[in-house]
Amino acid sequence: MVISVAAGIIMRDEQVFIALRSQDKHQGGCWEFPGGKVEQEEAPSAALARELAEECGIQVQESTPFQLIRHDYSDKSVELHFFKVTDFAGEPHGKEGQEVAWVPLSELAHYTFPEANVPIVEALLKR
Image 1 (cartoon, rainbow, N blue to C red):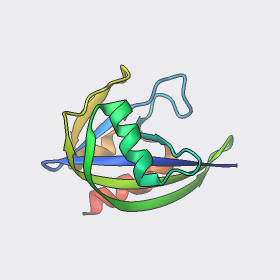
Image 2: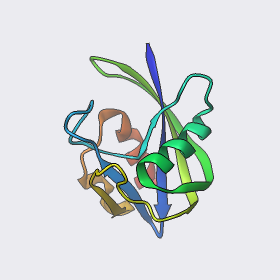
Image 3: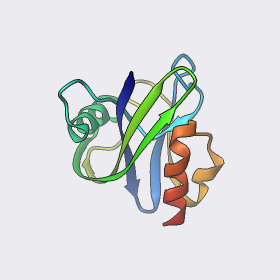
Image 4: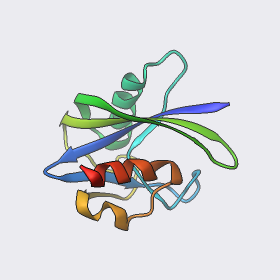
């Protein structure tokens, strides 16, 4: 079974908003682009808006598809729908108690991300 996930690359002033995954979650202790599972019959863009409201307390006003990544971990397969979020209402924060940070794009490579996120980090650094 493939798990479908929507993730937001939240950008502002050449910085990107990232969150630290809880130690008890899959790939815990790694930084990630916030988001979550796409529910059955839900569009990835709708899942993105719902998840970012739940996790970060923002309302997505503008997002564009960035990249689709399929990745097989030893214990699960994921399909990650990455969106670049360029306009939003509210100030992103760790609504679920997770550690968060605004990171300059140029420093993104200094953070540990899950393997499936590495191509996204590389693509952002090339821009």
